[in-house]
Image (cartoon, rainbow, N blue to C red):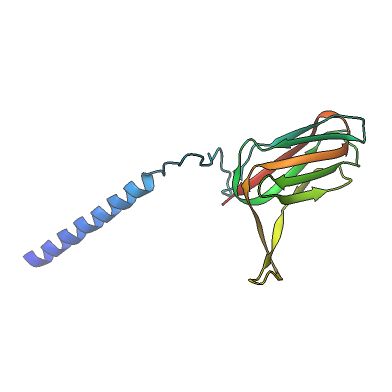
Length: 166
């Protein structure tokens, strides 16, 4: 009887120690390294919403141009983009979203002014560089730049919102 009680006590203490260790490890937050990305907000899907890029355009209507970029580098996959054109922007508007470095085209749209959602992806390749039928989310690791051309002069011609995460 005494041996059985001793074994239960030892097992109970071991289980308690393991539970405490797990609780301590889960409560610890990693210390970010210099230059680490600051996560500002996370929505219900675990995506991080970047700052919006608001682009002003200057010039003659139909020929105005503008540009902007995220206020920080984005590290991870782009899940979705939303483009919100200002009222009165011409349907001749061209936009290009790119990663700063290394250069990577994220999205190109020509002759449009319609608000829309986009889900950019990239075609996978095999080890010989031959395209496969599979596609994957777009991986980025720098600031995202946007250029707008052939549009209407406006203090807010376009607002682009980028949803990204791991």
